[in-house]
Image (cartoon, rainbow, N blue to C red; front, side, top):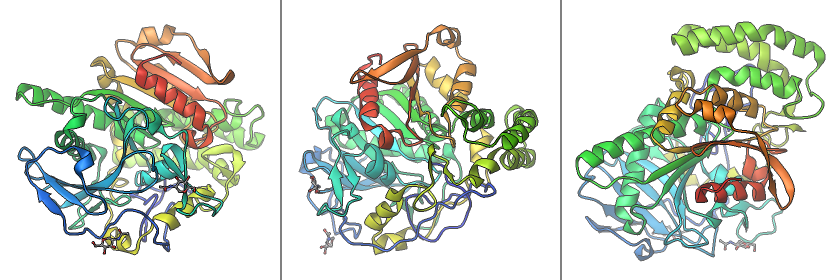
Length: 496
Ligand SMILES: *[C@@H]1O[C@H](CO)[C@@H](O)[C@H](O)[C@H]1NC(C)=O
Ligand SMILES: *[C@@H]1O[C@H](CO)[C@@H](O)[C@H](O)[C@H]1NC(C)=O
């Protein structure tokens, strides 16, 4: 989910990392009270230390952190514990990876696969923002349990039969440092995705080095929204570091693919895409925006696109790029923000808090332990001032991955306006790589779940683009069965 504006108080689902604001955009900052029924324990119980050991996860204790160190990673350690959280049918672990001499702490949840944890692939999920906790994806999208909105569940959640751990071992990571339960001791923060990638690489490496039962297992990186910026950079870091590891005779991470849902990747296509969503029929049969606003937008589009191309893409210039984005936002985005619609699903009106879903406030109540407020007082806020979103055309990373045989799935719910499917289609169509022609020639096909059309797909062996009809920004929330079907087939390398 994209969040806007600076200023934050405490924790949680999304903290703004200072993406510069858009007039009329909503504030994604949560302050919360807590009911103390979360099953993991952030009080860092004294832990048993087992240096230089490789462990089977099942030997990790319940409700007490086991600290693991590794001689090859002297600056890192993992604190992990088993927990009875969310999915009673599998082993569940939560913990921290402490990186940079223990000064930065990345929080994760790990759920074993419901099918066959000993052979199934390993997947990482992250949410976007920048600044959204992966707890949001876990508890309202693809996690093994969902937040209980009926106040009937004794433990605050309901088991999700469409959790993606039906098909993979999956961990949810709060990153960068400063987001969710992840924190830094001395208030350091991460300013750019390229910096965040180093910590994520350390995390994934030590995870596989420590839990040897997963060594060599196929690895997939998945996420949504600002994940469209994060994931190609993270995957590229993993790929590049693998080449270093190979040269030094070390084991490598078996990176297979990247999955991006309603991503924020090719920035310059964002505005023409938004126009098609609200003024065309790319999402709904009848456009939701007024004719007069649509005319105004149509007239502003060429100038917006030209300015973004020149100042943000061709020759990045911080001041001019910001000016271009401000122009585009005020001319092209303000009508949607004023409409009262849910910008993540234009078929609905915005409800609940500013992220437009009732679940958000329920999740923040559920997750906000007093101790975490203390931990999360220090947050990285410079993603905006460094223009992380615009400074590097992230699609170049995607092309680099494809050229090296890493598969990429771009999927998008069609009702999203924020990171809409049309923008994604535009940058994917234009992507410069050796398979461009084959991809261009591949046909669009309908795909089905249970005999019903779920959306459209265009595929080559390495690159697939999938739409999910009638889903918003958070596809697994809106279309759980369709999204699990898509992911399970993707992991198996089957076409939809
Ligand atoms: C968390 O750990 C502390 C310290 O060991 C312990 O006193 C407390 O009961 C634990 N809480 C939960 C919910 O496990
Ligand atoms: C929480 O309660 C729900 C509803 O009773 C149940 O289905 C689920 O398995 C429980 N979760 C855990 C972690 O015990």
